[in-house]
Amino acid sequence: MTISEPLRDPLSLFNVEGKVAIITGASGAFGRACALTLASLGAKLVLASGSKDELDAVAAEVAEVARHGSTAITLVRRPDTLEDAEAIRDATLAEFGRIDQLVIASGYNKAGFIQEQPLDEWQTVMDANVRAPWLMAKAVGAWWIDNEVRGKMLLMSSVRGRHGNYSGYTGYCTSKGATDSLTRVLATEWAKYGITVNAIAPTVFRSKLTAWMWSDDEVGQATRKRSLSRIPLGRLGEPEDLMGMALYLLSPASDFCTGQIMYVDGGYTAG
Ligand SMILES: NC(=O)c1ccc[n+]([C@@H]2O[C@H](COP(=O)([O-])OP(=O)(O)OC[C@H]3O[C@@H](n4cnc5c(N)ncnc54)[C@H](OP(=O)(O)O)[C@@H]3O)[C@@H](O)[C@H]2O)c1
Image 1 (tube, rainbow, N blue to C red):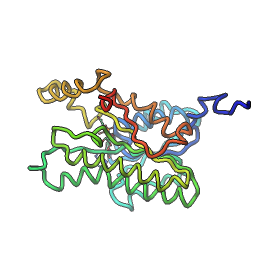
Image 2: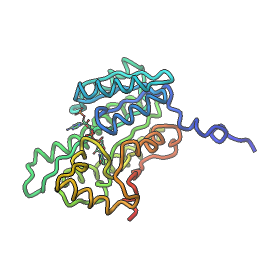
Image 3: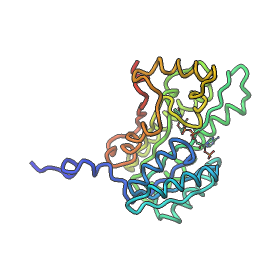
Image 4: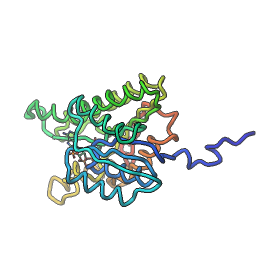
């Protein structure tokens, strides 16, 4: 029996050298970790976010770890409108001539109980977590289909897409449920083009969004204690905990995996 190439060299399944990735929210914890991971493995990166200083700091770190021909550019732009999303796509094409991976690492939460929360706050959460990924998918997906590129899209969901919460999360939970649906419907619609679309659904991991949960004030301590009591592996996450799954979903290793919400949550959803 012939031994296939992936069985002779299983690590080749995770090869992303020379691939071109757009990362939105590259200034954030997950975006930064993805950027560093892909840069050290030789991918070419477009790092997009709305915060120039934070983006520059990530770009400097990326330059430090870049290997195997990896290069990166930064774009100070969020995909707030279709024009923004297309500008991010077009700048990528102008620089690198193609797009292989789309990582939606941006996201936002503004907690507030529905009885009190103004509609515009809820809308801001939905815009960041649903509208922006939809716009990026529209802009990049059209290019993938027209150019017969078997792209890989990675979205960020959350255990909150599946579970409710006690803390005024009607915006966040609703937006992450929508992320799960967007992942599944894009995956089914684009499967015939060989494009894969998957999402990572973490529990709490350390980032700007969750910094308050590491604080020792009363609310931080109480929330941390409650979260930890539900996580079988007994700790909160770090961005690095998500990188194995991110690399799997962005590399040929996941070519037969699409439309999946991958829980990287210390066992939270198992209990
Ligand atoms: N941390 C967790 O515990 C956790 C758990 C489950 C899921 N997630 C999800 O993981 C993803 C990454 O989050 P993170 O934890 O890495 O958070 P983070 O460190 O706060 O990074 C998120 C990035 O998103 C961008 N952003 C913020 N508000 C935005 C808005 N209104 N519109 C568009 N972009 C905005 C920011 O970049 P700029 O301000 O520079 O544009 C920010 O750097 C998010 O989708 C989040 O919901 C996080």
